[in-house]
Image (cartoon, rainbow, N blue to C red; front, side):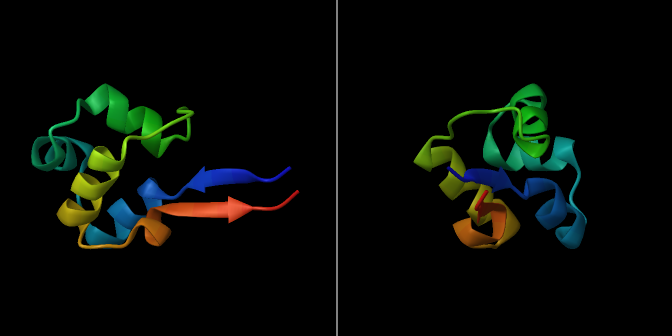
Length: 69
């Protein structure tokens, strides 16, 4: 079975936005965003994903990627 890869770090770098700045815009703690950025989470709420996409002006597909085995 494949896996979902989070590309939050890449999108943040493209947008030149820091973890602290994104945390403030999204309303999610630095610790939780850091876990997302490093792929250390197993789930994400749609409301959080929507807030991240709004803050980064991107689509969910820019952040989430499916990788086959």
